[in-house]
Amino acid sequence: MGSKFNFACPACDYSAMVSGKRDYGMVAVVKTMVCQDCQELVDVLIGRYGKDGPIGDSDYDQDLGVCPDCKGQNIAPWPEEQPCPRCESPMVVDPDGLEMLWD
Image (cartoon, rainbow, N blue to C red; front, side):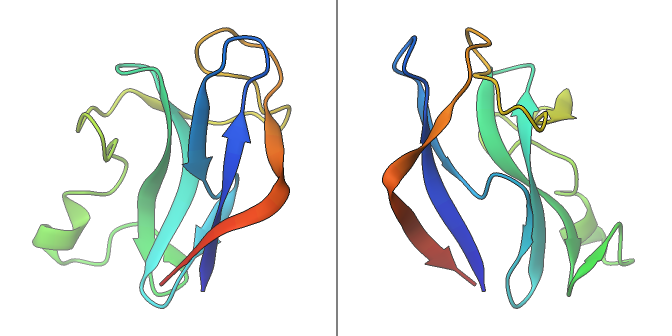
C-alpha cells in the first residue's frame, strides 16, 4: 500500500500531497517528480506490480512518465533536498504526518 504526505513550502505557501519518493500500491508504481510544464509536484506513474518500466499494455504504458495533471512529459525526479518547484526553498512535510493511503 502506498502513502501520501502533505509537503508545504513555508516561503511561498505552495503545497502538494505526494509520496515524496518512489512508492507502490497493489498495482501502480509511482515516483514523485517535478513537472516543468505546470510547475507542480506530482506522483508520476513509472511501472506496475512493483517493477519500473513498460509492461506491454499500450493502454497502461501510455501513462508512464506523464504528468497526471497536465499530461506533459517534461518531468524530472524531485531532488533529495526536496526543493519547492516554484521558488526552490526547502519543503517540509506536515508534522501531522500521513495524509492518505492508496492502493
